Length: 72
Image (cartoon, rainbow, N blue to C red):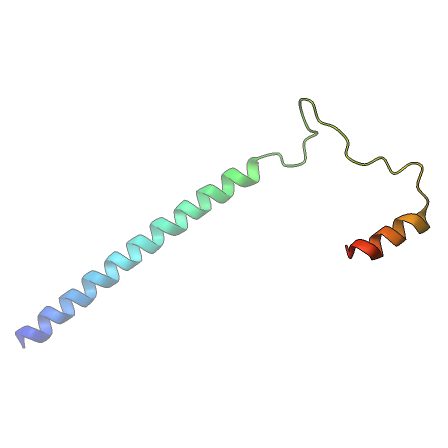
């Protein structure tokens, strides 16, 4: 009976530790998610930002050809 009681206590300890670790991990993920949500991802770029493409001057057939060639 003592062996069964000891095994039961060990299983309960493991479950408690697992539950605590899972809860801490969940809370940490929520904190990181909240911080990420507060960041402004769509702000205009600051500093020496350069526009990469100027679509003026190319017609749609040329752009369609490039689209098919590059497979984008």
